[in-house]
Length: 392
Ligand code: PMP
Image (cartoon, rainbow, N blue to C red):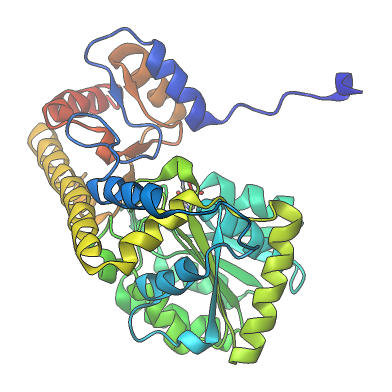
């Protein structure tokens, strides 16, 4: 039977990893895969995570099943991290999930029982549409990014969502938009909240980079603002980046209900969704996050480490924009300092991206997405020179 199968198209980002590894050039630059890198190019295990792992190893007495929602303590402590200390906690239920991707899968699967359509920004992280398609949602793209300015085209976005049908699902990036790095302003989020409420749209906020933009609290502002205004909402969060536990697969799916009772029923439905997907989430990463967030000292150490990562990204953004300014004598790349998180679109065509790879050993995604954290300080000028050269 397998002779009927066709190979799926290779994942563009993952295939960059092997191409980069095989490249023997000394000055090669890897701006492809979306993981944080420190100044040495490593994606380190955070010291707070190591300490939590040490404690976990010493204290864990069983590896028996927990349940479809994972570790109840993780589910309790992750709520204030995302929704803030003043969260309407009685109307929120959280499920531990295998990464942000697991959260998105069960939330979209859940939503597909209530509605048939999802609005996704153009562009967005590729897996959003892939998961939506998988659960049978019809995908409508809303305009998001203005390539000419490197900023959000909010009037176009708002106008498109004003035309959405009541009950439609709307996917929003809570902060650090992937791949553009362009986020809404607080004023725009407030206007958007009005549209969501008036049009009775169900927001699904994906927050995968909390702490990489303006800070852990600042980056959750939009989620918290919407949670204060909307009767119902879904949120997918990821611990992959801010705890640096990518392969441990840790995230959370949140449902905000009209009442505690409705939230509890929605939670039970999410558990049923998990049961048929993966049954139960892996424990290790969530146990680490729980240990960190339950201990004030460890939390403080972790927050410092997130701040160090955030600062490095912000410094690189500044350095890159300045280097472009010097080289081009223009502010054409100033958007790099306004963008938030690890990604920006550098504005190259797939052909130019190929030239960057072949002629300069600069690896980036075909759509021109760069992972800022992949740059080392001393590579900035070479990168700028390569981009300016291929763009003629
Ligand atoms: N949402 C966005 C926008 C992402 O970029 C990612 C990671 N690339 C995720 C969700 C999910 O990450 P993970 O499943 O690794 O937690």
